[in-house]
Length: 552
Image (cartoon, rainbow, N blue to C red; front, side):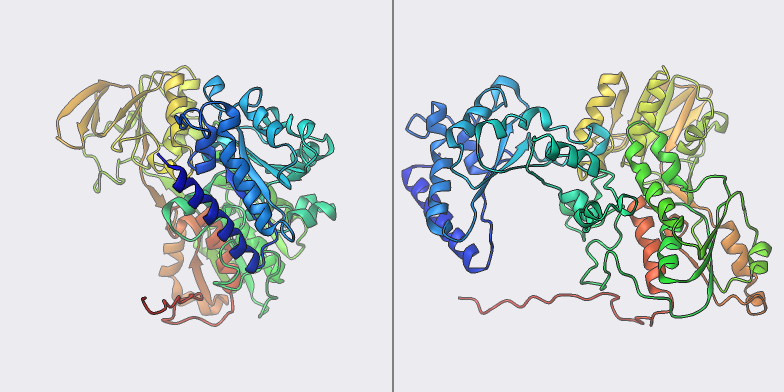
């Protein structure tokens, strides 16, 4: 437990840090009391604060440290810098924690106009950055609406804002003065300007998938499903709104209009290239049209909607639906550049992370894939969903089948359902939802056989086998590229010169099945780099070399 010297040191360090921030040129210097693990928040919370001195016990005592942190910060830099406070007004724990109709409100009332701005959060980080699958936009309103009634300071809020309509509604109705919009600004850094100019159709609305959060949690370069330039502004020189003009009069044929093909066609069109976009089905979007029809993924449809809207503004991009092309068709188009964006399909042989070769004992009459489920193919129960993908698809398919009244068991070699979604802050919510729906979960087990209405499962640690009754198995394992036409065209490379073809390439899932964000990035990269000088053996982006000073 912190003693009085520790507290004095903390306040001294707070002052010193504020002065350093002022010298660095910052205009706003925060005092932070949110997201559970910060010191000020732990002093506020009865769950953590068990002190018996003037910093514990009553709420007035528990607020003391936060008040002192604000005061020392304002004393140090308040002459030129604003001092906001970010605070959790409701821990979503009921009376056992801070809540908006109890101590959360009382803290704001006690400190009222002491900060220069209130920055409000609700719950922990996973709730502030709530994925779209588990919450409507602007869901914090019921918890934060009281704040402007008890303070004269401006108020900013956050938490699942993605639509400009929702943002503007809360400002106009006096719920908030400012909108905290980290994820929406990642998806579209020019969001405020586009709202101001009335360019609503040009806004890349955040889909709430939390791929950006996953980059933080996996210590990898940030990515955004909607904005492929995110993180590449300096590394590759990609501006979110500006793209170089075309450097040739080559005509480009994009085969496939999934997320990679759509992004590629839009970016090439904005560069000024003459583009033909051929889609085998009667609908644009590929997986970005199919997957949003699954439970909880409706917002992901914005990937398709934004790009279709952009295509309508590009007269140099010709779209052809219901156009399943053969290699001969492609040779006959007269296009100079061919780029395949034909996607991938889910395997039905069990190959994935656990099984590196096909499962030999499979009754294929009862084996389905997510593609079958999305196509509306009938599934008989009891059904086992074998999730060896570990992202969202296994849990979503199990939820869909359970909602149809089927007896569903989700089997996974991982210790958790949808284990990779820990990185997108979804995992606990996914597992809780499946359990609440009555889906049985068998973790640390792998499907090794399915015959005669019986599935055989194997413990991943001991190899011990057991059986489960099942009429169907849905394989959520690996995906295989839809590259047959690409391979056929490669085999006919001797005919390319006469047909005028100079390059044939693949992008998105047909190159390497991955996330929708990866597909969009691949499509954008192809369009950006068309006709540019190759990097050769060099790293195709800038690197920042940090040099350490001498050790003291």
